[in-house]
Length: 165
Image (cartoon, rainbow, N blue to C red; front, side, top):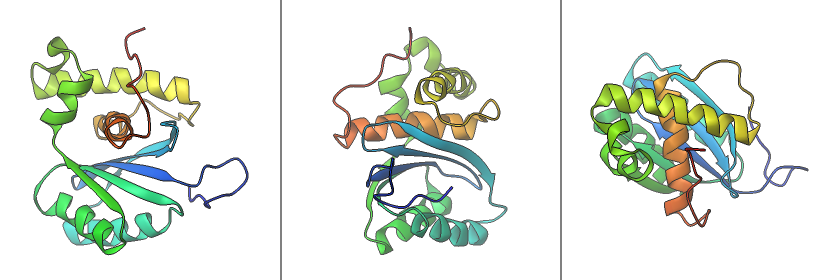
């Protein structure tokens, strides 16, 4: 879904959260911190990911912030592409955003954290009204939580949502 900046009903500034990997999770947020869409894509290879990253980033009019979680060549593909497009880039790792959003019992290990992300992301999806065709994969779920964290640390929202009500 491509969005036109300033189109009726759409804000003019967006944040894209990326759980970087060959299997990539993506989530798009507006300036108010509202989730607009989420998805997961198997990019197949790093070179295919580079092409897809460029196409996606230029296709979102009004995109101003890209939050990338991950490392290595897959994260660098997103970071370099966003930098070439003069977008603000926030690089994070799972340990950083998980400490902020997950309770210690939800973050005991990677498997538990991914499961917790799926559960918490479903609440965000319900509250946002974003199209929900399925339960998000852990990549998409983590991208949603990375996006919530990103809107907070970017100053777009004043406080994190209560994810346990």
